[in-house]
Length: 260
Image (spheres, rainbow, N blue to C red):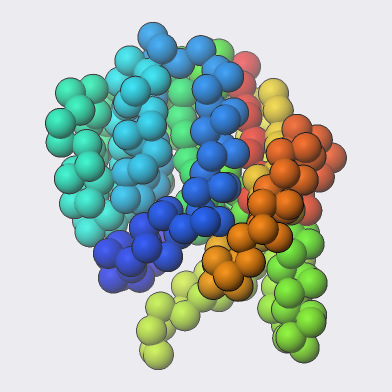
């Protein structure tokens, strides 16, 4: 896990994503799905909670939520946002070690915006086994994952003549620079691959695109100056967001798995 990167980036995360035009639109798409679920009497676990925006949302819609993240800096910001909420607990833990850091058993597990893309296939296979120790039968896994065939990314980088980045997701992994000396890997998975990894213990309930017409967040500056165009894209996103077929072509997709 790229711990140093996320510790250093924590203070900028909301500014660069959570509080932006694109970040709010993509997060709203995820929240729209969460409100369709009956979470009122359920206890949830959030993996890679980041700066706590989803924690606040879930705290108002479920019995209790335990938020985890490997980054102590992210945890400090989450603590600040949730300190007044009595049904929120904050736990500093990597995804891989959650099973050793909590003795609770949860009704649902939530991970937003690519936290699982920091894990290799082998690590994900391990997580699906370990999750059996902290989930109930019929519990729900709700993961938002960066896709493998994002159309926006292909078109944007191809137009800039950057073919390497246009195709970086297709290979299944790439590296992100943490600083001038260090890099860390990012892994991309199709919905079918996630379904296959979790299939021994989970079945797929739903898979939906998140950011099909709404672009990736690195285009925020461009669309901040073209809000009418963005509003058109958002309306198209609203229309096509319920079509599972397009999931792997969006920036992210939400996959809902149910424990057998």
